[in-house]
Length: 192
Image 1 (cartoon, helix red, strand yellow):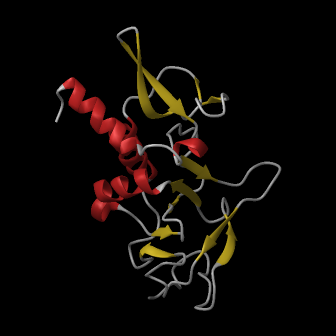
Image 2 (cartoon, rainbow, N blue to C red):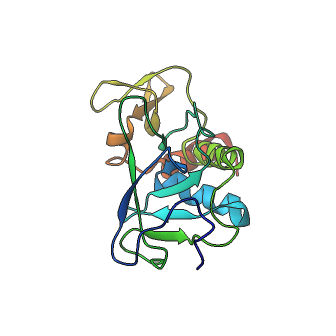
């Protein structure tokens, strides 16, 4: 692949290289459960995507185009005022796992993803996987700390009323999969 048109040089075919975000591009990181659905939604409209060995997906977007996003299991990586953030970028020739690789290869016309389209796809995936975002912060039922990213993990019934129990992203990965809970909600409400 010709990369001479890029404003930066991908690493040589030797190893992953830590490159600074916020210089040539910002990166949007999404957990696999949300990222896979968003990738499917974007289809051919996605730019290049890196997948790490944990199945986390990273889209490259224009610097400053993805600010103030509030989605569960999604982080915008950019340069901060007081510190540098780096992303491990694999060589262009690495297009299969299990190590970090280009899930959607870097290529002519396939570099940056439109941030607005990515935000829409990730928001749709967030809602499909975790259901509606509850109002305000919720307590993680495991660590009892408030979280801005409440992920439904189970329901409990007290005196005939169902209550959703939420977990923070750290503890949600150790509980029932959110997809199972979301499917249970839909079945209970008679939704497809």
